[in-house]
Image 1 (cartoon, rainbow, N blue to C red):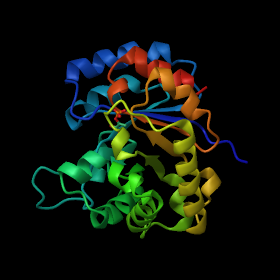
Image 2 (image 1 turned 90 degrees about the horizontal axis):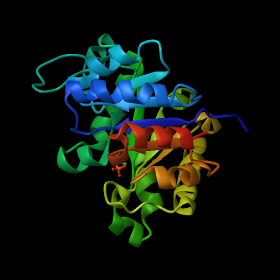
Image 3 (image 1 turned 180 degrees about the vertical axis):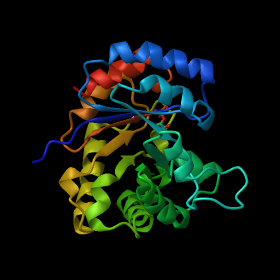
Image 4 (image 1 turned 60 degrees about the vertical axis):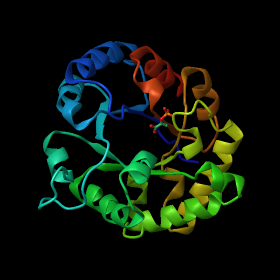
Length: 250
Ligand code: PEP
């Protein structure tokens, strides 16, 4: 089985000023100097440059939390993939459940955003996940299958290994209710099977778990054979907590 480099991403959501972002990176870098994992920080747009400038010469990558699918145009309030690349941003979170829930992000838009990110040279971190009602009704697999098929419809099978998938059950995001390692492993193994069916080099695709990951539960989650890392919200706002999660990835 190929070795997949662990991937730990900090999703700051709408938190941290430019000054706070700089302080965080200065505190984080010495704590994770020995890591072999991919470490990705996802600040709000306004703090992207502050993080980019501090991480030059380190292994840390920077991701935006969203982008528009067009390169330019009359889309007030939006930013495009080439604009992010110009800032030396390397990745972008797409389809986070908060964007789907509060900002009307659709699978149709994501079907255009994922190839647009790849075309510009950005690594897409595509978030998928089911609601609590869907899990209770045993519809998790159907929901994930629909999201994956719709969002990746225009991505070539061979390029799927360039996409990072984040499995984030909505009921676990920001709730303190983490999926059990067994639940997360079972669901992520199912996602890997679907990618294989879709013609992807599925053993190479990094699939993360997200949903109330903390220093106390990170190691057990990431020890599961199919869980390649974590997308971390709340616990990524504190440099010591995030560093502990990075170290838990091994
Ligand atoms: C997230 O924002 O993607 C997330 C998983 O948040 P939290 O870790 O706070 O649940």
